[in-house]
Image (cartoon, rainbow, N blue to C red):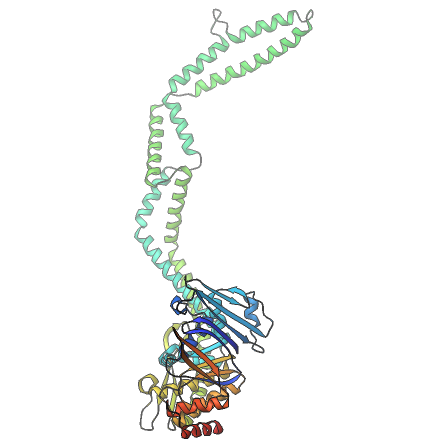
Length: 557
């Protein structure tokens, strides 16, 4: 619950420090005194959007801070998850906004993100304003009421996961069908492109091999002449040209002849012999290479034709090299394989979709059964709560219908049907309920939900719109009952019947100063409450009769 609230330089508030209490409290004040400003400041602590126009005129920044007592509310998991300090009891939230538009948030003096404030705020405070009565007309809210009372969070989570899996399976099937349809449209083109690439018999190193062969074939005569000439120079071509080998043989002979007289000559002769052996080997390879070189114009044409087709394919497919072209062919082959196996692929994806749908249906049926069960409880409780609130002939029915296809929340549509009179047929609550009746229905629902949700603080912002007198008193008693359940309930009201029942009473008022107007809030003592209630009963003129009526209201409360 909120223990204390501090507001500085927010809208009309210059400095405000106020303590709050457990149980049922009320806040009163003239229209425009600043009650909505108070709600707006609390909203900032709960992660609502910050606007610089809310900073008090002439000030550079505003600061809003609240201390919460979270003892016995089991919120340790939030602080552990977000790595925030928490002693198990006290939580301090602070929000700062500067005129330059910079916004900062802190949880227990640790910088926090706005989404963390929202997550924590949803577990700390429920602010019910007048416009929230419109929620009663939405199917999502009506369904959430049933689910909250049913405590089916675990089942809803399982259903949600199954629904996501089902959606994913449907999406995969649809995408596969579209992709295969597109591939079928391009099948002829793909097969033609792959055929052209397959004709090149692409393999790593083929390009370099073909380019080398083309170069050799283009210069075959020149190459062969050079090889034969080199061979003749080594071997010699007759007695007139003995060649290198003959010269080396003679050199070896001369060195061997003097080896006995010159020991070094023997080693030199051995080295010359090694050169002779190497030259004989080279000469043999030259002859073999020369014999292998052929002048083959037809082969040259085929090689050049292959290279032309290869270079054209590189350009056509925007491939940088041979490896990229091989990759393109592999992609075409993979796409054609998908076409050839498309029936099997689609059958497998359809089977997955059906299995996912069966899982969703199973969880959905469980949800439907639980919702029907708790729908009857809602009907019974609302009848018990609304009859004392001035609708004795109320009829309320929760109509649950089946949706044709699964939705994120199940297979159900929920609609609240309402009738305030015996002779009026049941119709959607938004179509037939008056503003006051909707307010009473919402309060009754909130009372039911407060028992099902461990929420520390509930703030009702003029939920009494459209009611008065005894009905207002009974609404106040219902809020007091909620406060007596261990939580903090605060009602902002214009009705003295409600204000009198609060265990604690706060007054919001404006004060005009020399150059500005400021809003203030104060907790009233008994005599101050009498005066405030008397003003609410009689208006600006304070009469003794009004004060007596105010005391009577407080005594009755």
